[in-house]
Image (cartoon, rainbow, N blue to C red; front, side, top):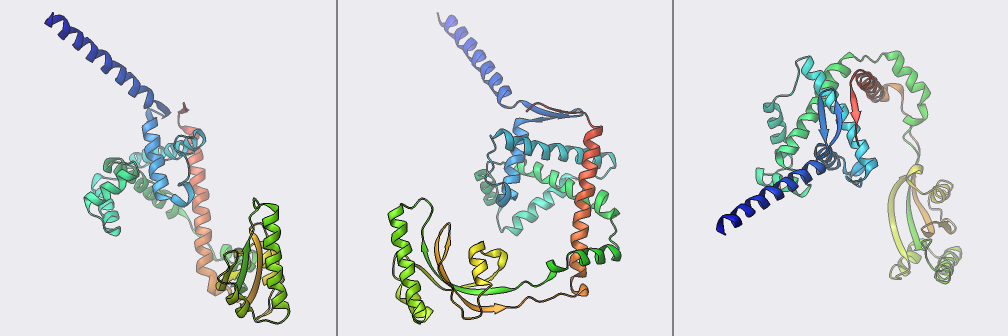
Length: 321
């Protein structure tokens, strides 16, 4: 009886081990191959986590499990593999020593110990080894970019001058206004009767200003009203920094001028222009270096895109996502 039980237990262990192994293979399936190299789903998710970590403002909200997002991350990985292979071919790969040095520099810059940084990565769903692997890929991309792309680019004075002549307006300092504001919020989903109530409130405020009461006095009187957001100085703004209706009103007013009620999607505004800064023209010599950097960046991105396009055409790429 004991022997039968022991044999049965062994069979069950083997059976469940097989099931778990099969399940693991399903979860970590191959999603693409580049020549003789494969990219698994776990590789893809690691890449996604690192990209989200490095660029939270651009990609932080992307869902790693969303098919469209996964296709984007996969394209990044394919480019990385093509660059890695090219560096190996020309004998300029990244060593483990270089990876460790970069890793330690990142820790130092963030003032973290080994344990603190490991815990930080863990919260982002990454192990130290996964992060180092991703770091190596980024170092490879930088080396390739510097060696194979940037070092072959020359920007001429004629190109810089032509760009300046075509984009002169972009190099103006830009007129700016400093404004104060009385704001009554009225979002689009606000019930009609409440919206009307708030509209009447802002019109009463406007009437007081029209009668000559100082803006600062009115602002102070309504500062404790829960329906009013009063700001004595919002700071400096360029036209593009403001909502269109507010910008149109602000840049028509003179210094010290007060607007009529301005209605936007978020509510009702009355603004006062506290100060105005006139646009400053920049001569060519003032912006020459800046234009060179712009042209250098544009040409670099163009050449990298061209190289990747050719590399993809010459590679055997299969996508199974």
